[in-house]
Image 1 (cartoon, helix red, strand yellow):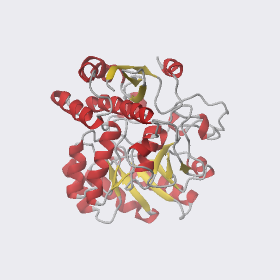
Image 2 (image 1 turned 180 degrees about the horizontal axis):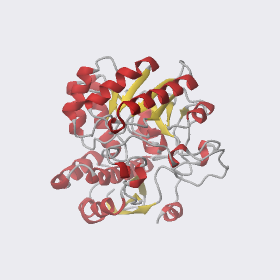
Image 3 (image 1 turned 90 degrees about the vertical axis):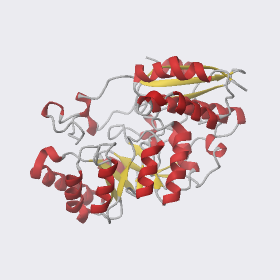
Image 4 (image 1 turned 45 degrees about the vertical axis):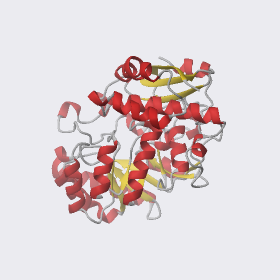
Length: 388
């Protein structure tokens, strides 16, 4: 069976999903909460990420085989990624065997090598996910069986977001919060971070794991001061402290914080940074995004790199997509999954999901749909309705 066509197009947001029915108790925390970020040093953009992030739509990718079977993948960053797929990758992959995913992934890596990483990796991810969806459908098996079978009965999930009381009400046994302040806020910001983290620890008690996402806002010195100040609150890890290219800084942070849990990789888009971090053991948890870091094939390769170094792989927002759920179900060194709670408090999680058949956590656990492919439950009519 060969590839007949590859087509990319703009779709609605890939994390928010379907509109909720139940009225919220209060607005979701992301509406106005300050979050430390790479632009925090500039007052005009300090408070909200939405003031500087691009407003491009998300991306859908449809791969169709010569018998009319199709698979569907999703990623982000709109027109630039759509153009890479439609004008470069897609035409060169047509007529290739649709089951030869390792070869196709290698081809895409080499095709995009003159401008690789970043947006090219997003484009690769969408095509790769569509190919795996197609392969599962052709084999009449869920993807997690095709890539090795279940490594566990279900995936344990942790909740991400600052509506911590709502997360506890939903039965999560671990939660991650977004850090409000960074180096630009000085000692006062460090004190306010401690007050914030102390409040969350008091709210959840000692039996619930607590993590902090620092979202590329820190430098090494601030990360060390932050970690030392937060030790009383028993954080499982601090995450994404540095700008993604600062691999030497990550190793230095590990040297200065030998006993603290460190996580990173959300914004590493190729295998090189993961191999570097594994060789230096500069982090304890890898966090590739399955829609950004080369798709399922890329994340499987990252999991194999991690396994040799004894590092866990917990993909960024993995439980928010069927793609990440199937990865988490099959990979032995992926001990849990991240679920970003996009819904406001009071809105049931199953009212905010990416695709009709996608499973959402219940009491902090999820098991992916067993239908062929990624079990998304999408029809061509549904996909047309997602387009913008």
